[in-house]
Length: 185
View 1 (spheres, helix red, strand yellow):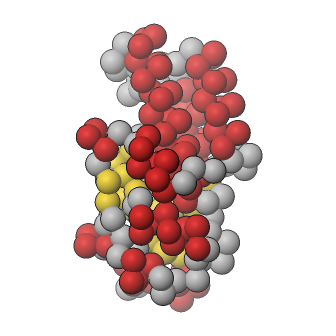
View 2 (cartoon, one colour; view 1 turned 90 degrees about the vertical axis):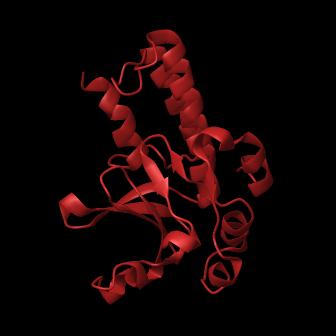
């Protein structure tokens, strides 16, 4: 797994920026030390392919989901809100196991698994940015938006994601859905 320092060294900050989380608030949550350190020392990208946006503590991130959405039921209090998907679905960290997931607003807030940890999410985003650069090199600058990737490059990113987090490509997961979009053309 990638460390906070390694993430800061590898992330394309000039392109995608970074947001920070208030260490004092993060420390109040029952998250692992690794997750707390990652959020407070590295933070997360301001935005990242594929259409993920993260919000700093100053902009409403790093709080319980029930704090972000006051009408959320109490069962959602174990989720720490950090951002949202391109569809506006909230991205959260499960306080019980540090897993990263989002709630699919269009499907009765179904929990959709993203990664097993925040560091694996960070490493997966780095790999996905590399993938986008590769498909643009092969198929032109609109390749990502047009979902135009060779089977070799799809196999490459699937292998990278699998090595980073063996659960990241389980049926119905965020990354499995993302890669399946390339086969729908």
